[in-house]
Length: 388
Image 1: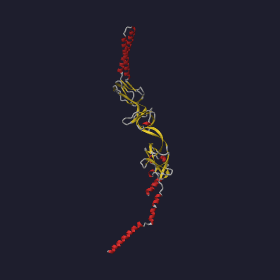
Image 2 (image 1 turned 30 degrees about the horizontal axis):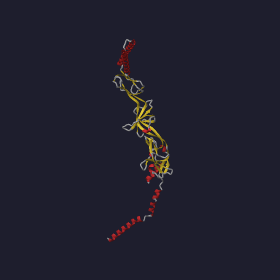
Image 3 (image 1 turned 90 degrees about the vertical axis):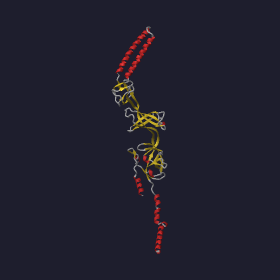
Image 4 (image 1 turned 60 degrees about the vertical axis):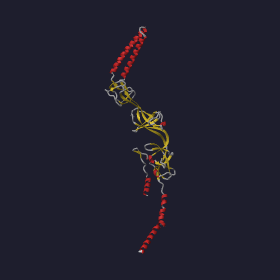
């Protein structure tokens, strides 16, 4: 039994020595393999990126304001005398000239009253002429002459009132425009103040918007403005009014922009965007897909210098131009990394490939900027890295 225990202990001791020998005396073959790991990593090729040369262009900074169109003038034409509507010569939506009749009220009684007033005026005129002759001959007192003259003037005023009442039975357009509404119908009875029709002057047309106190210094009466509508139309206008005081609720200033609208194509109440040109600066037009975040969280782009070393430039987005964006903060001419910018860092040396498709990188589809197509060389390099 003791002999078997000794044999077992001896076997365990030999196994322990054999295992320990692998750590204390490593083989030459295994050491050679490990020594090759570091040179293999140090010898890797620089990361390959696509670059395109971008040159600064003149860019006009713009201020965008949102508002709506409004008629130059819009009035409700109300009856100045009461009466029943006997005619409505125009319909809603009709274009009318100044002086056009929109509603006709019954006027027979008023015409009879006018005829009576005119007869009374003739009587007062004869009485005055007779009194004047008698006074000249000394047969009538001067006070009687004054009374006759006062009676004549009263009769004249009465005729003018009756003539005005008859004229007011025909409600006319005070200016040229479009009949926006005509609530009165034949047979309706209009009291004084009753609405016959609403008339709107649409040429010129106004665009009403507001501007913040931070930007109000950039606008002035007479300054040109581009106005864009939801259907894509663009019209040119000029600022006609800038409020001298701010709205107490919003702290913004009202602006009115006048647009020519001779054909009446622009309607009252449309949503409109006013674009005010400010100043011209140098900027770069680039696809939004090349933007990256810097180490400090700022938005920017990555470029390469003449030695193919990556540089990071923070940028300021000036405008979303639809197919691309305009940015400021870059040198006059840069070599912009268009593909691979998310996989490199500032100070890193890279291998560059010219991006021949750069002109198409900002093409839109359904209003979105398409990402650039990954080049074959970069895709192949990425596949190799995944495989390793």
